[in-house]
Amino acid sequence: MAEAGGGIDPMAQFRVDPVVGADWTLLGHNIAFTNSAAFMVVILALLWLFMLGGMRRQLVPNRWQAMVEGFTGFVSNMIESNIGPKGRAFTPYVFSLFMFILLANFIGLFPLALIPGMHPFTVTSHITVTGVLAIMSFSIVLIVGFARHGLHFFSLFIPHGTPALLVPLIFVIELVSFLVRPFSLGLRLFVAMTAGHILLDVFASFVIQGINSGTAIGPVVSLLSFVMIVGVSMLELLVAAIQAYVFALLTSLYLNDAINLH
Image (cartoon, rainbow, N blue to C red; front, side, top):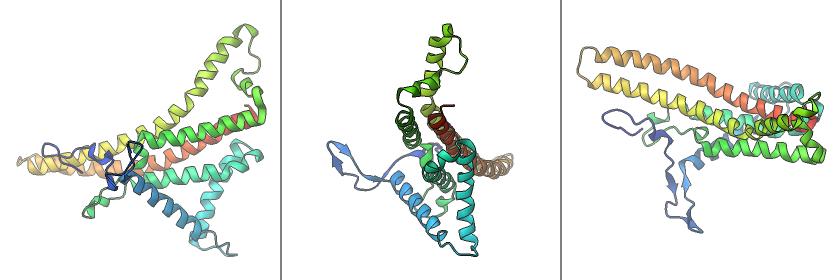
């Protein structure tokens, strides 16, 4: 974390820096392998190892297999309750989405700064990442909706029992509400992760400034700030899990609209 004015720059943790290939270009665009890409590769590798270790299908499952089955069962039950039997085909996608976001959120909270030359990086604190995930989910919803229902998919924007006089107004309102979904889906995760990490760095700055202040109240400020860091860290762990769940839950609800036209 870079220092700024004797403290900590809370925005330094979000900086995307090239790891290799800083001078690589393609069609005039830099294509360096960045720290963001590196962390996404690590996340995918961990997810692959997690699934590989839990797919042994032993008659008496070990703890690893039980944990994998617990996560898959959790997502499967969520799909079943929100979509029904027709949603089973989308369980792999929603599960992958949930696990990727969950691992990304947790890895960003690891104290990697304790290792020389390392610092934590949360890929879900970048709108480019959460936005792409949201657009992917929204695109699947549109493809499934039109593939299954054709132009009848537009009936989703006209609730049953709507008076004929209000149909044009309700249609526009429902359509705008539908089109806003990918923005709210991506922004919710981005804002939640960014805000928490900034707050942690702000309190860390208070700890350093309190120690270096040379005043009698300085150590008190540092101690209270450290206590707040511990509290916020616990809260961030909860937020990391909740945000992954909310993203997967909303994706399943949007798929339910496309499949069942509810």
